Image (cartoon, rainbow, N blue to C red; front, side, top):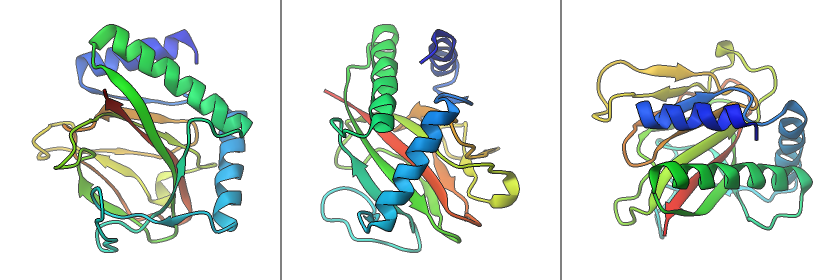
Amino acid sequence: MQDEHLTTILAGLADRGWCVLPDFLPPETVAALRAECLARHAAGAFHRAGIGSGRASVVEEVRSDSILWVEADDPHPAVRRYVGATEMLKQAVNRDFFLGLDELEAHFALYPQGALYRKHLDRFRDDDRRTLTAIVYLNEDWSEADGGLLRFWPDPSGEGETIDIVPAGGTLVTFLSGLYWHEVLPARRNRLALTGWYKRR
C-alpha cells in the first residue's frame, strides 16, 4: 500500500470517521481477486448471507447477496496481497487511534442482478467487537447506471443527507462500524466486493 493512501485514510478517519479512497488496490490485484471470486462462486463455494450473528436466519427482504468467508492464510496470491494491505492499514490505525484492532474477518460478497442490502449498521447488538469496516470493490467498468451504489449516511443519527458511492473496482470504503448507517441499492448486474471488519481484542 502506498504511504499517501494511508495518509488519506487516516486523515478521513480522524476528521469524519469515514473515508472513500479510489485505487486502494492496483488494477492487476483487483482483476485477480475478481476472477477468483467468480471462480469460487461458479464452483458453488458461496452461500446465502444471513442477518445478525449466531443462528440468525436469511431474510431476503433485507439482504439478498451470497458470501464466502476468506481466511487469513488463504494461499491465493491476490488474496495474500489483499491481506497484506489490510494488515498495514490495521497497524496504522492502531498506531494513530489506539483502537486495539486485532482480527480481520472478511468475505467475498456477490450481489446478483436485483440484489440489495437494506439500511443497517455493521455492529451486532450482542457483539460489539466489530470496530472498523473496510470494503474493497472488485467491479470492472462500473457506473451509476449499473446500480448497486453504497448509500451512506454521514450523520451517525442515520438521518439527513446521504452520499451515494459508486462501487468501482479498487475503491476502499472504510468507516467506524458502530456509527454509520448504510445500504446497498439494487444492482443491475453482478456486484462484487471484499468486505472486512476489524474486531477489537
